[in-house]
Image (cartoon, rainbow, N blue to C red; front, top):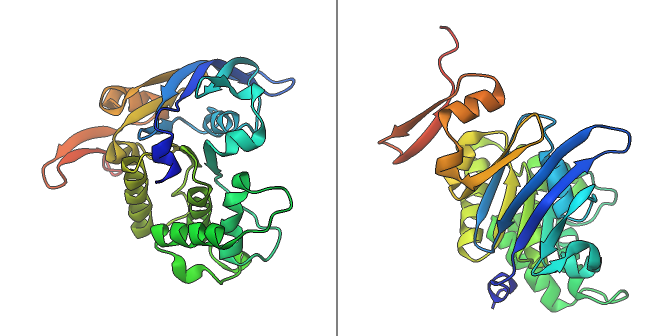
Length: 269
C-alpha cells in the first residue's frame, strides 16, 4: 500500500507563522491553515508576495521568524530532516543539475529518506523510481542524461523524484511554468490523480485558471503579506483576483467546459 494512503491521518498545521529575511521587512505574517492528505491547495499571489518563501518554510529550507509548523502533531523544528523528508517532498521551480546523472539515477535519490547513510539503492528503490517515471509518462527518459533534457522535462523528472520519495505531501513551486500547453494539462491531471490517491498537494501558480481547474482549497497572499485561505470557489472571486493582480480579470461559467473559467478581457478595447 502507498505510504500516502497509510499516513492518511497526518496533517500539516501552519500556526501563525511570519517570515522576514535578515535586515529586511516582513515578507508575510500570521499565516495560518491546515492541510490533510488528499487535499489540493493552490497558492496564488503577485510576484514577491512570498509564495516560494512559504513553500521553503514548509519544506524546512527556511525558518519562520515566529509561529510554528506542525507535522502530524509534532513541531517541525523538533524533527530530524529524515523524518520530515518521509512526510514532505519538494519540487522547486528551477533545477540546475551539477552532475550528469542518468534520469533514473536522479529519480532514485528520492528514496534516500528510507536508506541508511552508506546504503546503495537496491532493486526495490529502482522499481519505485521507474514506477514514478511511468506515472509521469516519461519512462523513455530513464537512461538520458539529466543535463541533456529540456527544462520542462527536468520539471517532470523532479516530480517523479518526489513521487519516488513516497511522502504524504508534495510541495510544488510553479510546477508547470516551463511546460508547453499539452504538458501543462497532463501535469495538472497528474496532480488531480495524486490527490485522489491520497497525496496532499500544495502548489504555487501565477495562473488563477489552473487553481479553478484543479479545485480544492486556495490561498491568496497579497502584497501586504496577509493570506486568505479557504475553498477555491469562495476565495477566488472576480473582484479578489482583479485586486490581487492589479488588472481586470473575468470569471464566467463555460457550458462547453462545464467549469468556471478565469480570463482577461480583449486587449484592443
